Image (cartoon, rainbow, N blue to C red; front, side, top):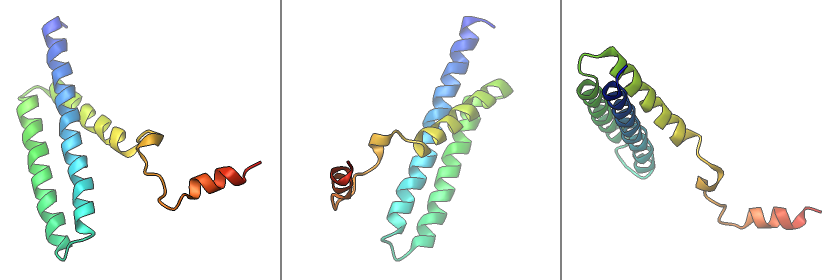
Length: 108
């Protein structure tokens, strides 16, 4: 495998990661919007169609006719899913009521 092929596969993985961020980040954003919307089903359907169209178009453009690029792009897509669904501890919001501080203060 030449250096050029390695760079192309790295680019495909990066683009898969970006597509995953768009797809799963868009899903997160849609769910947050749906909670306060009168037309939640319309939000979900529209978001699903848009996110799927973007992801499939991106896969098609990145992969071309090469199965290796498609596979690496798909791997980057699922790595983005893992990055968004298993975030580090500091990504989580702290409770607004101060429950964490009260629990820590009451421990011996």
